Length: 195
Image 1 (cartoon, rainbow, N blue to C red):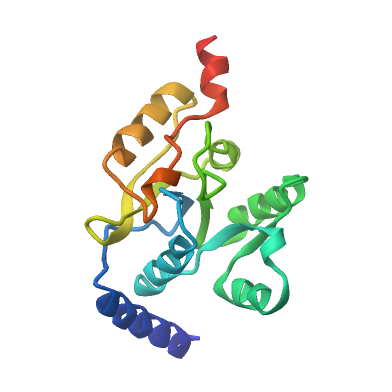
Image 2: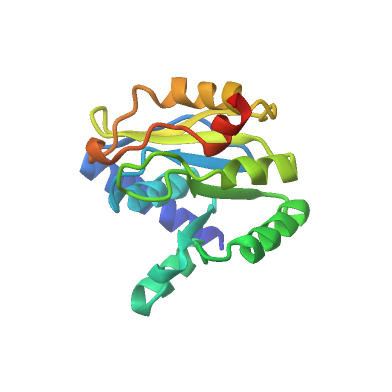
């Protein structure tokens, strides 16, 4: 296994250097990684290179329709976890159990849920963090600066608006590969809390 991690790290560093991207930040041993902006299929590639550069394994939630043919094998090899969007509960319950027993547990979620502009983010990261007590780490890519990395790590307070204000502030200056597809960090639950 050490040889595989050594190979991945060196491959990631070579590919990132060739593409003129850099990595920054620190990642915790356990947590929910909230990645944004998610505007391109290249986001997944950059996320995998970031993980390999840091010598970590991320369980990245990916919609189950992508697990067909050879792509499915590649996704599973990379640590991706199939998520049935129609019935995500079983996958989430299994991941919550894993988070309690695994020494290193990093769950990656593209909270926008799609590469196209939407009105709201998916709130799964928030619910999972609240249920497990795991902190969130803001993972990002910024195409203009060609930077991919880890932002701050913190525990959610339960005040959805205040917590999301913190996310909005952090992601405000981050631009995706296709910036027109970005969704501003906002949860439906904010409307309920405000109303």
